[in-house]
Length: 480
Image (cartoon, rainbow, N blue to C red; front, side, top):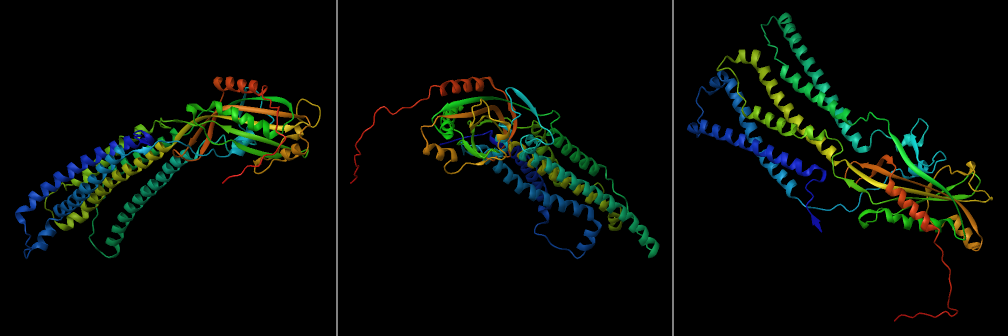
């Protein structure tokens, strides 16, 4: 079943921006094409007089401005139609509702953090240089955030290169004219164009890029809160049995009666030679539909402003002077004309760059879910807690039969004492796009989760199965 998701990843807002921009540019381009047609209609079909070359030379500014206006009008007309229908399709498109989020990354490190010896009830953690949290969980930047920051950095590097290039070209032109006049005894003159508008747009782009990058830099120290509890469990089952029952009870924390990813099971070898098993359960991740950074609403109006302004300057391009000598045009005005075209092109580049940044920011998705970790270790000695030397060094995914299960099958009636550690937190995760892999950004305490954990631990005391009646006969089953 499909349903419209107008606000997914900002698609509806970008569609509106494209529709309005395309419609305005389409109207401006069509109006200018109509005026050009009326202007040249009396001369159709064109006839080339004998002195046409001399007329062109004496009307270079008019010919140049008309050519730029004509090409820009045709391009604006075609692009305006394309952008209008592209934005309309974005607004009306229907997509399947999102059922599953991406996988949780760095699960081994999350489990190691949850079950570390320093974890205590209601503790507040801050990462240090040697902490495992620094490697993965306490990143200042997730992959989605890094995409936005690197996009602004690359854009600023390109803009600074353009600034250096224009400064170098202007100096080379001045020096080149002086060398030509000195060495070849020529009377070449060159008028330095006014770079004010160009420096203005380049400075504005660099400043906006810096503001966008700084808006993703967190100024607060990230602290992670989660709670844990140590238990001693005795019974006649293997450790994996306790994990299986605990995982089934953890599904109670799922919202909307939806199941999340399957629990992740791990195994590690302890320093005393025995094995320990653990499970990491995550509830169904609830997506936050609000954008990650409100700077996106500052970038949205800049897209149509730069797009319409750039095409307007090109479509209505007019040279300020009348018919002048071609030598005067090339020596004093041609560089200013080219600079005006470059300025308009930079406006179009700015619109394209802002559109890309807006899409990257809108695609970043935030989720909230419950993370619950449970570790089971066998107590070989009559002690209430496991020793510090028995903490695992490295967790690996559990595949195939677990070692303790094989030992239990050999001696199922032997009573076992288990050291159980349970840790839980409300986790905030972030992905570069809706269904992408998610990275943990925060841990928080949650009262509702605390109540559910207490209920799960209370129910575990009531779990007991006994076979009271069994058949002594084996009855074969046949199928036709």
